[in-house]
Every structure is written in C-alpha cells, then in structure tokens.
Image (tube, rainbow, N blue to C red; front, side):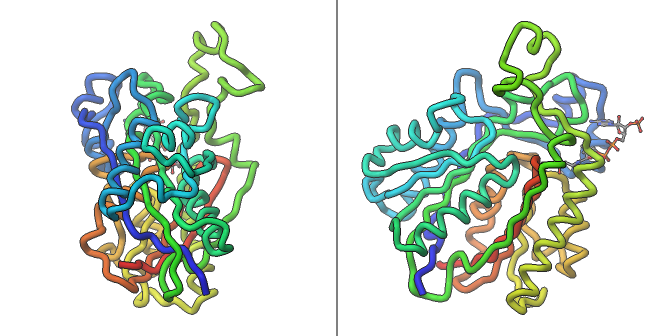
Length: 326
Ligand code: UT7
C-alpha cells in the first residue's frame, strides 16, 4: 500500500525574542501569571517588512537540504497559514518561486490552528492516490501581524515561526496511517478576526476600532480544546487498537500548557511522551506541529507511533496517526 512518509523536517525561528518581562512593560500582566496560566516564557517576533513567506522559505530550504534534494524535485507546495503574505495570491506560489520549485503547483490551507494538520492530511492523500511524488507542507505564521499588543489576554500567547515537512511515497508500514478531522462553524463566535475579509473590508473605521486583530473568548476555547483534542485522539486510537503504551509521542498543538496536560491525562499518556516547546515559542498557530517534530527529531526512531492533534478557530480540530519513517 502506498503511503506518504515524512522524510525531512525544517524550521525557522526569528531571532528577536519577546520575553514575559518585555510584556510586563507593554500590558498589565506578570511573568508569574503567564507561566502559571499558559506555560509560556518567551516567543519569537519577526521583524517588520518580512512576512510569512520569508519564514516558510527558510524552513522549506532547511528540509530540502537535510534530505539532499533540489527544489525541482517538488511536485506540490502547500502552505498552512492564517497570516498569508498577501490576501492573494497564495503564499505557496511565492515560496515555490523563491526556492526554485519550478515544477510544483501549490495553494494555501487556512483552518486556523488546524491548518497544518489539514494540509498534511490533504498532501498525504494526494501522494497515496499516486497523483504526486514529493510534497512540501509548510506551516508559517507571523501572528505578531494580527495581535493587539494592548490586549493582555491574547498578546501573551502568540509568537511567529515556520516549520516544514517533506513528504515522499513509501510502500513500508510507515508515514501517515490515518486521520480523523472535525469542524463546527458555531465556534466562529469565540475565535475570529472581525475585519479585513469581504464582509468588513479594511477602512478607517475598522482600523480605529482595532478590528484587525485576533478576537478570542479564551475560556470557551480552552474548554472545547481539552475535550475535543482528547476525544478525537482517543477515537483514532480506538479505531486502530492503539493503547497508550503503543504511542511513542503525543504531538499536540501548542496553545496552552494546561490544555496539553489535561488532554494527555484524559488519554492516559504520561508527560514524558508529550512533545512540549510552548515555553520557548508560545502559540505559533500553523507552525506548532512541525516545530515539535523538528525539536524532537533526534529522539524519534523509525516505526515510532505518533498522535498529532490540534484544535483551533472555526472551530476546527482533528488527530492524525503518523509512523515515523527514519
Ligand atoms: O490556538 C487556538 C486555540 N486557542 C487556545 O486554545 C487558547 C485557549 N485559552 C487559553 O489558553 C486561556 O483561556 C487564556 C490563556 C487565553 C486565558 O487564561 P484563563 O486562565 O482562561 O484566564 P481567563 O480568561 O479566565 O481570565 C482570568 C483572569 C481575568 O481577570 P478577572 O476577570 O478574573 O479579574 C482576566 O482578565 O485573568 C485575567 N487575565 C490576565 N491577567 C494577567 C487575562 N489575561 C491576563 C494576563 N495577565 N495576560
């Protein structure tokens, strides 16, 4: 059976670090509150004049270099992002051109914090169907471009970064094994951006009223994130008779350390099996999952079972069973 395997991972983290101490000077918050309520200590911020394509290009090039492949070998580029370089064209086109993936077609996937997992699923299906051979799936978000640094409830959470995976076909029992995804549009009310789309295009009024930033009702999102990430992961594990002891690593979207701990506990997974890097990067939206794979790459072995899971605006959520291929 033909499957899609991850054969390389790349990442890009902007140099500038925004610490909790820096945020204490911007809004009414404390390092103690942020660490206790979110687990975040610092996050990275991309400089002005650079966008999500810049970070995506660096992450993609790193993945290609690690695999020793030229960009011409790529058939498809998918960029997962909620902060595209421009409203159109797709950031994927800008990235393909910049890295020299001249044979590739491409598009962006936007499903809030689930963007990367959905993009990975679509890419894996394309490979499994025999339509394409090599795909770059890149999660890149410059969250600082849509965060209100006067709103203490959101500005402490988010950061900028990109992560990329290279997918290639395999006949072995590794790669993307299965996934379960769900969405519920009723969740839009709790996590969205009010202006900048077709219903409320940018205007002096929308800018004055600060409507171009992330709007979040944190408690509602928190509650749903714990329940849905745990339930969808449990359903996927049940479907394939995977027990907690069969899982090498749980790879959750990094939105809040307390959400991650509660979801892992519901699944009966000890913390040493949970990939965690939220303390250093915060919530990087589409980049959290590939960044986790990048940071834990040296601890992974061929055949390891990973459960990737996410929850985000929409609401969108899902889980994917991945067998590590190298
Ligand atoms: O990735 C997409 C999905 N997003 C998520 O999964 C995020 C889910 N939500 C969360 O992570 C949490 O809800 C937050 C981190 C956003 C907020 O934490 P919380 O423990 O749910 O706090 P809360 O919203 O219930 O607020 C508790 C108190 C409030 O004060 P009062 O009304 O009790 O006086 C807030 O005003 O904490 C206050 N607060 C803060 N205090 C200090 C909110 N933000 C801050 C802050 N510093 N930065």
